[in-house]
Length: 370
Image (cartoon, rainbow, N blue to C red; front, side, top):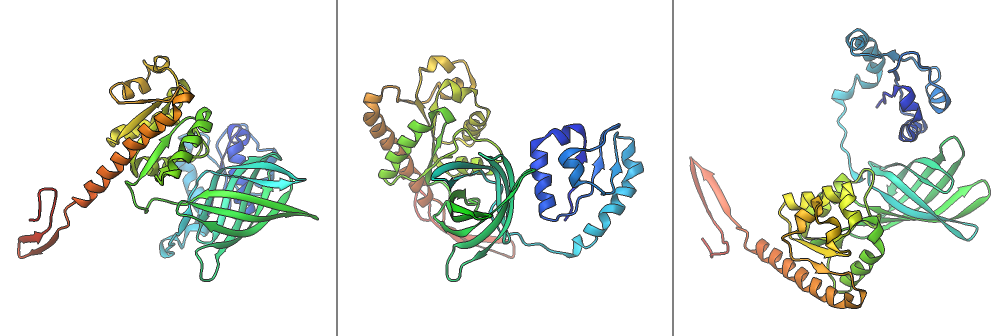
């Protein structure tokens, strides 16, 4: 409905702030600024966006109560009907990381998004590529008799030009694939994006999570390919050491795992995101299998060393023993998946009724029917 930027020198210097507020401006969302710093006047991109806008000055805590009525007065036209307006959001993609590329002059140029969302027919996002930082906004519509979509969005390079994108999506259980053409003036070529779908409502407990740091991506992808060949369901972030808004994806990966495999290196032990990921797995009492890619003495006295000290790891430092290590890993994965299935099959299927203070029912568990 409305966005309130707290204008200051730090805000103006922030690239993220520039991307976000530029998208807000492009999308036509009302902006009600607050000047949050004394002796400051917005310039550059922020000066252009907020030019002519009435602002409220709140530069210290004592100003809040005195200026609040003025701010509410500016906000009221945009929020007065909020309580009467129910919004039902259908978020297909919510703030996820996205990777892809566009083609030009016969060359492939990487595109990386640190935010990408598809909600109620609208597409929004921000990222960067060879040209620079950009924001996108557009729309998607469902193709008849299919679960795929037709889409179009505008890619606005901050302080530069616009490029139009359009095409259709395909999908599998975990991803949307965006394919189509980009257009600017008389130039056009193809592009491809891979977008993770929201997974919060999906089935849990039947995938194997691969947790690793970016430097190990090549080997981890090799392991992932071997596991896929054996029809083992896996989850791993192709972007490597995860950055940006990935908490929901990380939670899904850990919570839905029958096993978490950590690919342990000194760099892994220094990664804050890897630490969050594996520590969360420990808290949830997940089955963790450490894969040693380096001598563990290098990280023995770190948080990682403490977690894996009592665990039965697999050594994958010697490439000549790679196939043997994979076979060992597959055996342990299959055991974990079988245990998970057994656990689910023994869950009590109880029919209960509560009448006049009485509880009755029937079901079965590991011991037998009851």
